[in-house]
Image (cartoon, rainbow, N blue to C red; front, side):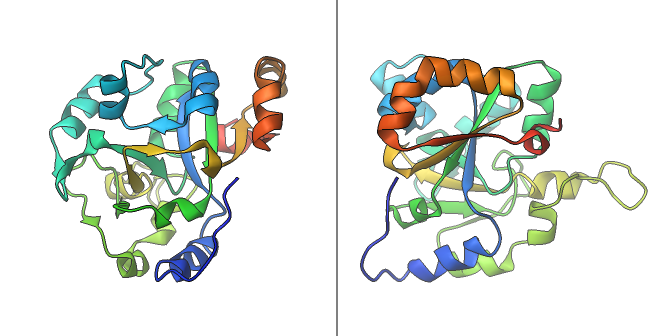
Length: 218
């Protein structure tokens, strides 16, 4: 767990974000957790360069769009993707595929890292805008980003809201384990399984584990 110290011009934006969300979030398969807790979260390109294998839960067609998209001198695959809201369309797809999913809660202080940027929606979308100036955080559609569902007043899919609810914080290269705060699971069975397997790592890192069914549409 990392604590912020000293003055930083980005510090006020941590306080701004705390009024919106307690953490930033990364969605992953539980098979990846042991390596992540030992080494950190790597961008796709960094993982490939290091020869790291992982259980990929993403959709190939989405990743094909992301890997060729260059933002501020890097491709999206050079960044670790974090969400403002983990209860989003990606989570919905994975839960319906019966995947064993965990959510890593990441300290908001990760935004202090050099080169961090953010988007107003799903990074794969052609409509999405990207920002490297944090005052643009005030311009985001937080009502849509933090919504529970991406439907209109009639209960039908709202595709613009669906894009926005997947707004991302993109961290170059890696997110170190010191930024990890909690792990969230959908049920007690999976929580107990992971605590038995990873208890020594969780204790050493000071990471707590919680059951939060709502994140997982349970």
